[in-house]
Image 1 (cartoon, rainbow, N blue to C red):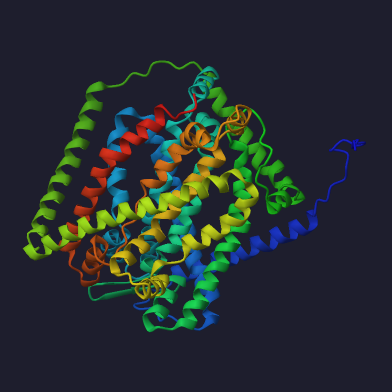
Image 2: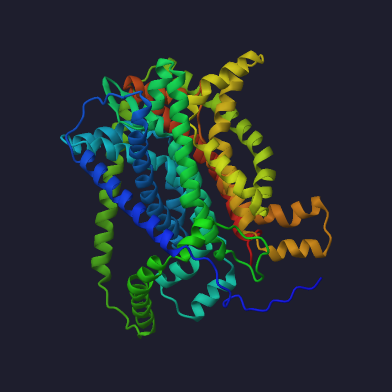
Length: 559
């Protein structure tokens, strides 16, 4: 049977739902405005010594709003940092090596190691306002979100095809034009999926960031994390279930209202010559595109501003530049003074740190080194187990949008549930099956490592050009040949970005030593355990991950 289209697509009347969409957007805007006012009023109020956590389910909506605000603010700070840091590291050859080394060290330091310095500094800086403690929690969540986003954007910039760089040179794009028209769109898919796992990581670390003890001081903030930790410490199963249910509800709502539309929107940045037959869809994105009010705002406000910015950048790029006269001696003198200042501060801080390390006894040193060895073995075991299922699952989800619509929210929920709430149940099950704390700690690590790999593999599979898969169909490649010649090379840069984000969480290991040192206020032991952890991670990155990154930038790059 042959179907004949009698009308063009543009002539057929399509449902727009403009009135309903405009009303929903208006109410959402009013709700967001009220939330901002409520949070600003709370943050600008007087400092609360120790917040009392109400375990009643009626307190959960307010706690959920507080936690969501902290996570979103930390995410936007992480996004700005990841874009600027990744761009500078990828574009500046002189700064690339030291910037990557700094990133290696910072991503190897767990959240609890940042906790004492961040909280004490901000509380001392803003002692009379609640803002100090809140900013401390936001920065701690930031330290758990930002590193994989920075690595992802840097890796995307390094894998941009050569012909796109040449096109940017031919059109004489300015650095800002190149960023918005080439670099940011090319890294959009990986950045979106790493943003999802970063926000999931924020929920994962929420309990440690909202309620913790530092020596004799008890820092406690109202939120879902402190609610779950209070319920877990008192053995209140009913409150734990209520808290997890509300957290899952917020995560699913974010998935439907934010991440699903963003994934569908970012698909247009996929680098391919042929249009893919199966693309991700979002009813909310389609409704927003048909909204009359948003079209008016876009036409009257954003479009003129963006056009003026583009015209100014184009005029500046076309304007002949005259060589600038610079005073080389003044530049050299200023750089020398700055370098001397940095070196002096570094030597002084290193001397103070070494003097602190003298306070550690030999037994603590031996226990920390033994814990480091145990943690290293557990982390690698967890990575192997996580890779065994996340690589095939991520490829399947990335290749099939229908499966992604089902698996994506489930993966976000599973990645966001805090380990502290699940570990007692998980440990009881393992002990019942005849396992011990060693197996339990590996299972606990899996809760934190597998999602970084899964989300990056999904991003790599979605970014793989559809024509490569069609060529594999044309040549009738077997399943093994497809994986060896198309799939694994295509997702390789994203896979390395996911594998390098190791989370050290254990019952007996460096994580336990750092947690114990933080709780007791033993800053010398905390410093030593953090140095040992950073040394291990940086060494592994230099010997393993950095060569694999170079391989991804050369052999497995679309040219």
